[in-house]
Image (cartoon, rainbow, N blue to C red; front, top):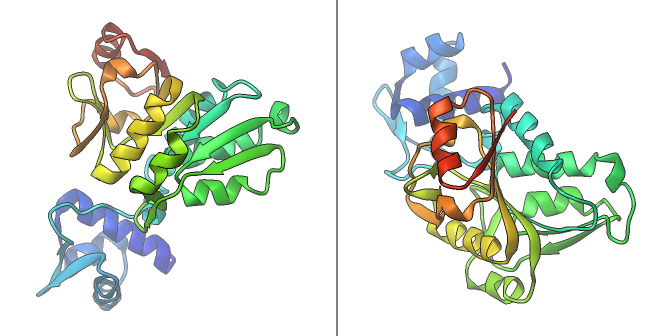
Length: 259
């Protein structure tokens, strides 16, 4: 197992459990205790965790796993969801993409669609995600509009009032949201209030709103509200979503696509 893969696994275990002992982590990953101690020390230097005697705990009460360490979580589900979301976008549309691992996969799915290989433009992509803009900027058939703002290192997203000037002057055909949580009662939400504010603006400027979220996000709550469930036109999720969950969203007026 490579160091990056090991660090990703350690951070995911830490997020799930809140605390890890060296011996416990070594057994989980089938490596030596010395390797885990070294990993914990290096991750602590990057402020990714807090070192304790004999182990580590999550860094702070609102710990958020950085985007680069989230990519392997529910990867196959996210790719299926992304392909389905990309299929809901018509050539020539203006598309808003928030940051996140699932929306990054949506951007990649759009990039390989054969019917979007040419056009003037084939799509207009408006995003506050630096990584998405970077990946799509090499596609000359796509017009890329990047909002202003201050970059968040956890998510590569631009946030803050500088984005208002751009988003206040455009209209979108569709906004694609990546969310931390989506609940019928509490709506769509993000972990960070600044990200939620930008996502909310994208929704307000869009004719329709698509939420791309694997089923682990559904029925959950998060700190910062983006929009109500009634503001979401379509939810694209994976096939493990429960029938009761689908029924509740459909009763709220949301079209549910399970892939």
